[in-house]
Amino acid sequence: MKEKIIPIGIVGYFLLMVALIGVLGWYWQNFQKTPVQPIEFPHNVHVGKLKLDCQFCHKFPSKSKFATVPSVKLCVDCHKTAATDRPEVKKLLKYWEDQVPIEWLKVYSFRKNANVNFSHKPHIRAGVDCSTCHGRVDQMITARKTRNINMGFCVSCHRQERAPTDCWTCHK
Ligand code: HEC
Ligand code: HEC
Ligand code: HEC
Ligand code: HEC
Ligand code: HEC
Image 1 (tube, rainbow, N blue to C red):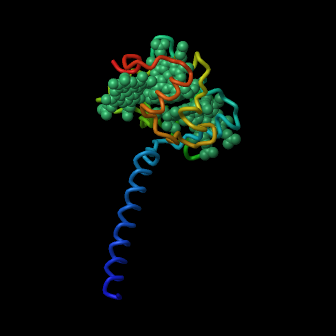
Image 2 (cartoon, rainbow, N blue to C red):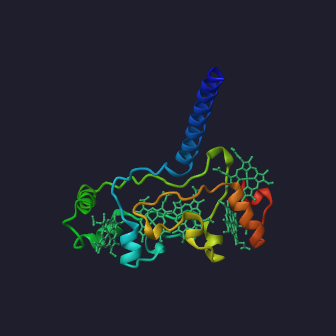
Image 3 (cartoon, rainbow, N blue to C red):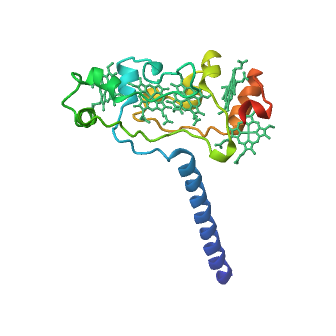
């Protein structure tokens, strides 16, 4: 009896470790790829406390399908005088002095080979809230993924909202 219990115990332990590594790997892939940004920009302060609108910084130019991340100039308009004693703001002012753009790392993107054709415009026009896709950015410091934006997510909402679901709507 004893001879059997030990190998089963070892196999069980081994399987448990494999499962644990699998779960961690999945979690890491989906949610933890949050890049460390060059400046720890606090969304929560600017949106939650200062009540700036998302689109004050992320403008959606009528011709482009991309939201944009603001230029250093927009930050410095306030930070010439606001919170200039804080270390992260000093970093910001150094970029401005040196006239170099801040290399913000992308948080959201599609796999290239999926050839996705996405545009913010129809969604904003249809009144879909930013948080539906990006989570509560107003409570975050730098933006991080709270969900994976995959095909299932897009298609199930399109079905529900009676938006187009043929392949060419989203793929080119
Ligand atoms: C229907 C889902 C959806 C909604 C609603 C949405 N986004 Fe996005 N957003 C995305 C996806 C998907 C990407 C990645 C696009 C890509 O890489 O082509 C993205 C990318 C971005 C980016 C990175 C720059 C860019 O355009 O690639 C910013 C900034 C952004 N969104 C801000 C916002 C803001 C602000 C709102 C609300 C006004 C919003 N988004 C609403 C899905 C959404
Ligand atoms: C409308 C004015 C305004 C704009 C635009 C603005 N900020 Fe701020 N920001 C503030 C104010 C005011 C504070 C201080 C808030 C507080 O602590 O109460 C602040 C705080 C900060 C802090 C936190 C400092 C700390 O450690 O507590 C950082 C970092 C920062 N801003 C970076 C940026 C960057 C980067 C941009 C551009 C993408 C930007 N800000 C745009 C007004 C602004
Ligand atoms: C509402 C938008 C939408 C519709 C409609 C849609 N897709 Fe997609 N599709 C996506 C998104 C988003 C992805 C995932 C991109 C990623 O993972 O980065 C994707 C991924 C894929 C992939 C995987 C590509 C890869 O490299 O792994 C294939 C294949 C695909 N779609 C085929 C189709 C086909 C066939 C149809 C029609 C039956 C279709 N899609 C309809 C949005 C859509
Ligand atoms: C004061 C300017 C400012 C405001 C207001 C602001 N953001 Fe941002 N946002 C930034 C900056 C700077 C970055 C780049 C750093 C980062 O990724 O967090 C960014 C990044 C993002 C990203 C990640 C883009 C990518 O790389 O894929 C999303 C999504 C986003 N913001 C959504 C929002 C939403 C939603 C709101 C409103 C609730 C908002 N932001 C309000 C300045 C702002
Ligand atoms: C929460 C719901 C929701 C999600 C999630 C969503 N969409 Fe949409 N989408 C809509 C609505 C609503 C419309 C507007 C339909 C209209 O104007 O009649 C729309 C419109 C579109 C259009 C324009 C269609 C046209 O020809 O008018 C495209 C392209 C599109 N979505 C792609 C995507 C992709 C790609 C994703 C995933 C990354 C996605 N959508 C995720 C709700 C959503």
